[in-house]
Amino acid sequence: MRIFQVDAFSREPFRGNPAAVCLLDGPADERWMQAVAAEMNLSETAFLQRSPDGYGLRWFTPVTEVDLCGHATLAAAHILWEEGEAQRSDMLHFETRSGRLTAEATPNGVRLDFPATPPEALEPGAKADNADNAESAARQASLAKALGAAPVYVGRSRFDYLVELFDEVAVRDLRPDLAALRPLSQRGVIVTARADPQREYDFVSRFFSPSVGIDEDPVTGSAHCCLGPFWSSRFGAATLRGYQASPRGGFVDVEVSGDRVFLTGQAVTVLRGEIV
Image (cartoon, rainbow, N blue to C red; front, top):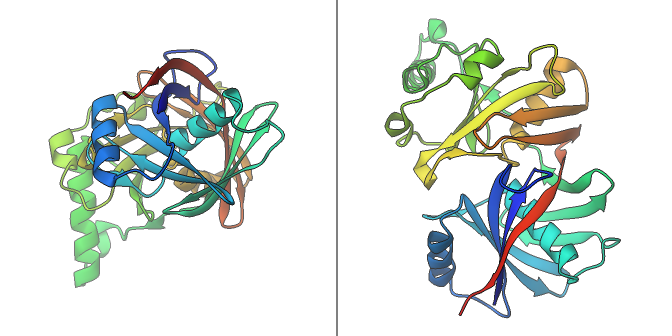
């Protein structure tokens, strides 16, 4: 079986977020897929199997299967077009644990149609006058302590916690206690702030997910399903650009439309191989 490594949300190699893409030639055992993902040791490995209506798509970190992954979906679409498995004029359809997702080729890169996962604010600790608010206050205190930063806002989406900090510098300078983040109930923690005014993007973010084997993800497409609705409401704009300020870094163009989020980014193949 053919396997590829792709740097997603990047125009050049060795930037953005690396993902492995495995083109299956038939049904695969889940334990085998998990073993391949552990061997690849990237934040995600995508497994594609052709189906009557498109492709079955599953994503694995080195330690577990996940429900949604943006950069590995972008990488998968990129490989299908680049390797001639599909025409660039074709809209690609993926059946996943998060329902049907689509990808299309545009002049600006791969455009993904994903479900929006807007955050709900956790009640501030000052209102901890009942059991629910006390639990929210405890979560916020745990997050603030683990991050080593004072949040402006704390919310929770379907998958992750969302923490807004005062400014871009605070996000970039963050040095969280990853061991303290590991036991948190959500998949990960998105940390974000408005971009400095002179930047070419609207907001900045970082993503930490040690509970699924990813200390810091370079560029997280699925996190922007939460960031998109959050910042769209703050800016009063449907179309925004985000920058994920990991050491590798990458841009994600976001368009919010009702309960969907369209994510656009580029990709480059850096490795081709075979599983023997």
